[in-house]
Image (cartoon, rainbow over all chains, first blue to last red; front, side, top):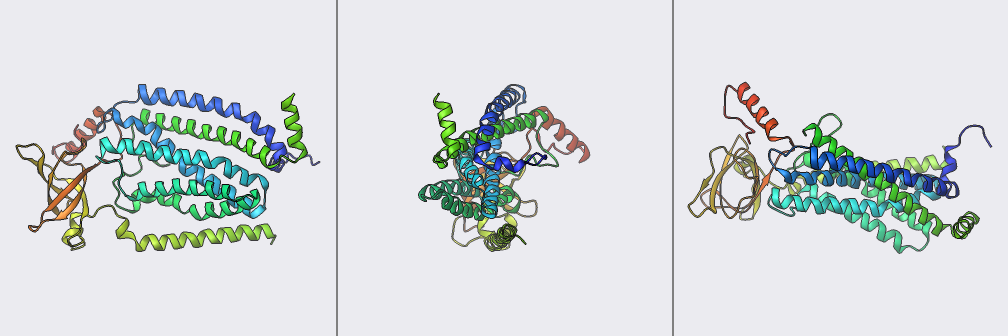
Length: 248
Length: 153
C-alpha cells in the first residue's frame, strides 16, 4: 500500500458502506441544527414583507426546495458522467440514491409555488417558462427512476439512466435563467452570488433553510445508497460479513 | 489518450451539442415561450389576431377605474412607451396595485382596447420590511425631485 492517503479507496462499496454509515448521524444533526436556526430566523425574526405581508414566509421552504431540485440534478448528472466515463460501480448507485430526494424537492417546489401563486398572483398555475421547466425537471426525475427500475440489469440500468440524466441536464440552466430570458409571471431572482434584493434577516433565514435541505439530502442519499449497495452486492463477501455482523 | 479520457471527451462533446441544439430550438420558439407581450408589441402588430393572448406591463398610476358594482374594472397597462386600456370584470388579486406589474389574458376588442378574462398580479423580486420600503420610496422621491414615492406601502 502507498503511503499517500488514497481517496479512490472510497469508490469501492466495501469501504464506502461503513464511511457512509458513520457520516449519516453527522449530516442529520447539522441538518436539524440548520433547520431550527432557519425556522427561528424565518418565522420569528424576519420582518413582514412590504408587498406580500406574512404570506411571503413560504419562501423559506419554496426557494431551498427549488435550489436543491436543480442542484441534486446536477450532482446526479455529474455521477452519471463519471459512471459512463470511468465505469465505476458506485457512481450509478449514488445517482439512483439521489433521485427520489431530487424528485421530492421538485415536487415541494411546485406545490409550495402553487400555494403561493394563488394568493399573490391570482393563479395556482400558469404555463410560464419558469414553472413549465421546473415541471419538466420533475418529469425527468420520475422518468429516470422509471427507466432504471424497468431495466433488470443494474449496470445497464445505470448506463441508460445516465444518458437520460446527461441529456436532461440542459434543462437546469433553462430553469435558472428562464426568468431572465423570457417574459414570465414568476419574478426574477432575488439572490445570486453577487447581490441580494432581500432584507438581511430574510436572506439568512433562507440560506440556513437551504443548508438544512442540503444536509438532509446528503443524509437520506447516504442512507439510500447503503441499501442499494447491500442489494446490488448481496453475493459478495463484504455484504455477507456486514449482514452477519448486524445479525449478531 | 486513455479510453476513459476519450469517453469523457465524448460526453463533453455530446453535452455541448445538446446545449447548442437546445439553444437553437429555444431561440426559434422565443415568441411562443414568452408568457405575455407588451403594449409596444401590440402596437407593432405582434398580437395574434382574433385569438386570446396575454399582455403584461405596469398598471399606470391613477388609471384604475372601478364601477359602482365593484367588479367591473378598467385600467391602463403601460410599458412606459405605449399604453393599453384593459377592461375586466371580476376579482383582482391582492397584489394588484397601481404602479405594480400585471399580466392580463384576453382578446382585443373592436375599439382597440383589451378585454381581459383573467388578471394576474406580477410582483417584483424585492423582499423587505414596510419601513425599509418606505425609506426607499422616500429616497427615490427625494432624488426624483419630490415626486410621488414609487414603492409606497
